[in-house]
Length: 73
Image 1 (cartoon, one colour):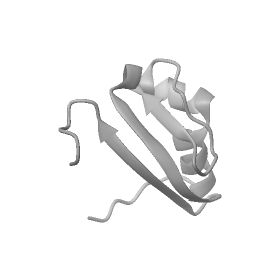
Image 2 (tube, one colour):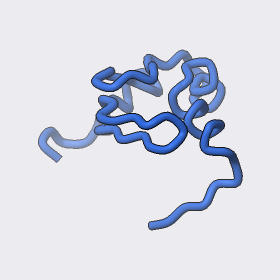
Image 3 (cartoon, one colour):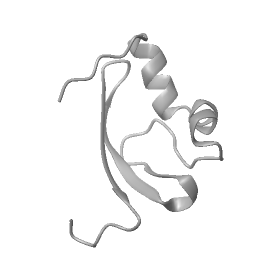
Image 4 (cartoon, helix red, strand yellow):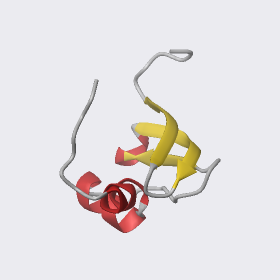
């Protein structure tokens, strides 16, 4: 799948990793910071994960899951 976003790479990077910006689209205080190895959660713990790799303004690699997904999937 290919998705094209009409925003700068810096804006997208900040929107997905800056707690103040993430709070705007999740409508609650997230637990996230732009640090490799950092665990994060959104939506009251319904989405959790870990940041695997970051290249500022170029790449965000995460492992994440929804709370209701069966373990191991």
